[in-house]
Amino acid sequence: MFVPRNKSEAEWMESRKLYWDSLTVRDRLGTEVYDNGGETIDRYTVSMGNELYTMSDSPLSPLGVNQYYGGWTLGEDMAKYGQLVEIDSLPVDVQRAIESKELGFWEQS
Image 1 (cartoon, rainbow, N blue to C red):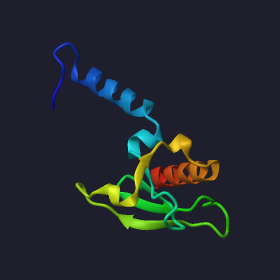
Image 2: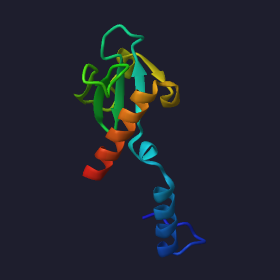
Image 3: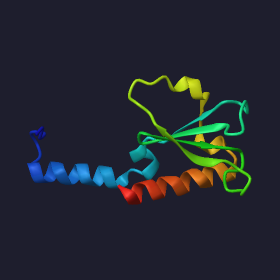
Image 4: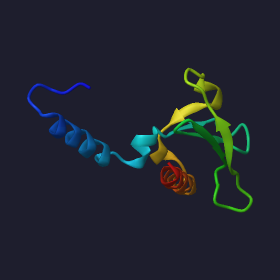
C-alpha cells in the first residue's frame, strides 16, 4: 500500500476516507447523460456506475419512459447514445429521476 512519507498509514487512510466521504453520490458513480436530440421517445441515456437507464423528457409521468437499459463495458463507444450533456441543463423531472436512481443505486451497494 502506498503511504506518503510524511503521514502514518492510519493518517493516510483517514484522509482517504474523508476525501471519499466528501464526494457526492454523483461523483462516486460517475453519472453521465447522453442526449440523442429527440430521435426517440427515450431521448436520454443515463450512465450510472456500469448501468444504463433510458429516460424521456418526462420520466416521472405515467406516460414517460424511465427504465433500466442494461450494462455497459469499459471501452464501449458511448457516442452512439448521443451527445454528452450537463445534468444541470436537463429538464427538472429528468434531474429528479436521476437523483432518485442515484440514491437508490447507492443504497443497494
